[in-house]
Amino acid sequence: MLCSHCGHHNAHTLAEGESADDVAISDLQKQTAKAANSFIKRLLGERTTQLKLERYAKTRLEIGLNKASRALANRIRGITADGDLDALGNISDAELTRFIIEQGLGQVITEYRETQAEILASVERLIQVSAPDWAAQDISRSVEIIAEQNIDEAFSAIIIPDIQRTVREAFFQAEVSEDYGAAVDQLDRQLDRKASAHITEARTRISQYGRAIMTDAGRAAGLSNWLYSGPVDGITRRFCKPLAQKVIDADQLRRLKNGVGPVLIWGGGYNCRHSLTPISADLVEAAGFERATSTDINNANKGAR
Image (tube, one colour):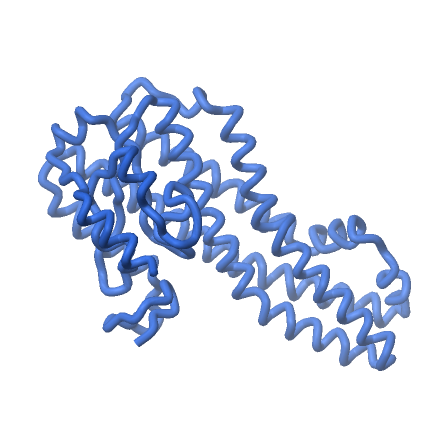
């Protein structure tokens, strides 16, 4: 069976009402309970916290985007009833963006920022396992830049333009058919259909934010080993499976090719539930982590094809 989550054939299927995040969190909790020492428990426990934050962010996004979509369609429906649709159809992209944000998308972005802050706090705790004196304040300027770029990539570059196109198509349909009610009803349905893709996009971007912050923090703390942490379950990618719970060094990291983008940012690809946690060489030895071999790297690269 083809897994809708990772795109690979797999014998495992999700139970009704069960998400890939639910499966990952359950698996990590079991790993944490079985961990051989406190270092491993802290690292796996914090990664579990991050996944819970990402799952919560997805729930908030679903609620917020659906609510904003309904509010937008209802507002346009009200404008149509007042006979002002022509004026709305002629507004600039900047004005339309402002209009969309005012209907509820602004609140979604605010909540997204709150999740970013919570993930930053979790990253700080992870780095402090290897570097106790390190603080997120050490990279405060780059955190601001990464956070804004992350929001731009999710909302300014993808979600808002997509909503704009959908709204303008509704305006055009209304002008052609002169059936404003039908055009707004169609807009409502289109926004509802697009919400799922928007949620997936934002969910992927919030994961990338965590990985980007983790990468920057690790470099700032002088850490050059990465623990490929996350679940090992029935929907784990073939790229991720040979690497899970193993330590990767800088040379191995350069050799990894997931077929999507930088592994430090994308992990195994879209919706990847794994994270590369920077750790010190001393911690690798103290915790007894297994190091990835050349065979593991080759198998991961083969799995990405």
